[in-house]
Amino acid sequence: MKKILFPTDFSETANNAFLYALNLAKSIDAQVYVLHVYELPMITGTLSAGLIQNVYETVELGSFNNFKDNIPQLREIADKNGLNEIPIKFILEEGNFLYILREIIGEESVDFVVMGTDGNTGIEKMLFGSNTINAITSMKIPILSIPNGMIFKGFKNIGFTTVFDQKDKEALKYLLEIANRHHAKIHCMHVSKDGKYNKQAMKDWQNQFAGDPIFFEIYHDADPVNAVLDFIKEKEIDLLTVVSRNKGFFDKIFSPGFTKKIANKNITPLFVFHEQKA
Image (cartoon, rainbow, N blue to C red; front, side, top):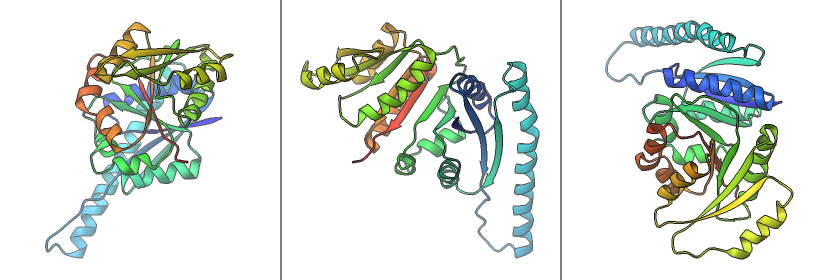
């Protein structure tokens, strides 16, 4: 059974993504770990030790009550949608968000993370802020971001952007497991800015995956973002998959120029794999 980690701030966007995560879990036989993390404030000045302790206790109690009050709401979402049979584990932790996230991923052998996205959630800022990009890439497991309002309807056409690198194949094989569960097609898309691309590499990929429902598309466009958006529309992509390669990739793929277009147009969930180092 696969394990999905779902970090939440209990916002509307997060609750929508929670329902998506539950439906996805049902389709691939997975359990869901719901994680809420809070941090104690940094207190500077001349407050007495007793007052500082009171502040910490108040924050801890408030965070616990918030967590406790929101669990029934999440349970209700599952019940109302006939998903109460999905195994759900609720986790409340205090500490640095990214540290806790990596710790839970390791301890529970999590397969991938699901999170809601609208460009404004606190979790997004913690995950994709400029100072945390390197930390998130060290997790080495995929992250699935769900645009606000997105409804899970299964997968028919899964998009996979590639440069035909050998390292991309591991992500494609992982994705193929999900595609087979849904009897979906995978469209491998490569963007050529100047009309040139490695035809031999593409042919090798076609030969290796000849028996699988995988199709290969070449898009010629000086702007990769426009090419990807055209690809999503033309192939009716219901899950877009990308492989991150460096910090610059994250800066671009999670920049307003890309995610804002996807989030505002409610286009498709984005599944990000991290390039596996040799």
